[in-house]
Length: 342
Image 1 (spheres, rainbow, N blue to C red):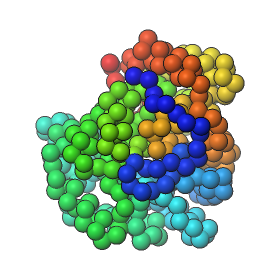
Image 2: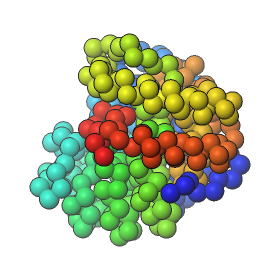
Image 3: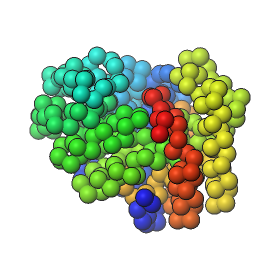
């Protein structure tokens, strides 16, 4: 299950068959909107400028991030700069509940056609653009793979020139749940958690994406901050940071132990943990772009510098995959959604 052969690192990649060119490292903007502790808009704006100055060519956002706050910040920055870069945004489920139950949850309760069209207009206003490059459903369910009403609505938006590509952001703990829709040719981009601590996408999703030339946006590449290498077992978070309720006790302890094992491999290739984590993701050419979050210019600069680094040596990738098989694949928890007990 090794990664595909990587050519020397390129800062630009194609997003699958969409014709959209993106940077291999983009910027995710959840923390700029809400739920990661106090965040000042000026810091967010400065981070976006820094990333764009250093070659970032993909900004990922969602309507729910601060109820439009992150979309509005992106719109403001791009208007100030007078430039256009690819933007991926996400439409939230209509009922506000992300978790879905296969065979039970009805897609029409989450993403009815009229709702998708109406909410696209909201994103266009927030972003101050005429179209979004990738319009993504912000959750999915495996039992929806034969549904087409949502897809027909997306096609109408494409025909109207309001979106360029159709995407799905799959659930934190079900990386393969949209594979049936990929095989049916109805989706052009998949956003999925992929990092050193969560490697399941390379088993089934990535091979299928290569066959159908579907773009992969790898989210949570730093495992919500764990893979920066700065955490210890005493790490705490502000009460308005969602991680305060997730990375505690045994989950925190297990995460720190695992990252410390990965640090040994990073040190052997002369890389700090953050750079190593980003290089791992972009070493696989299946990944169109990795979208870590940045809250200030310093973080944005570090991420963009990692984009310029070469792919990891094959020996280092093999070591991470062996460690995954031996330990990391059990009791996975890297984000806000439910973990895996596999």
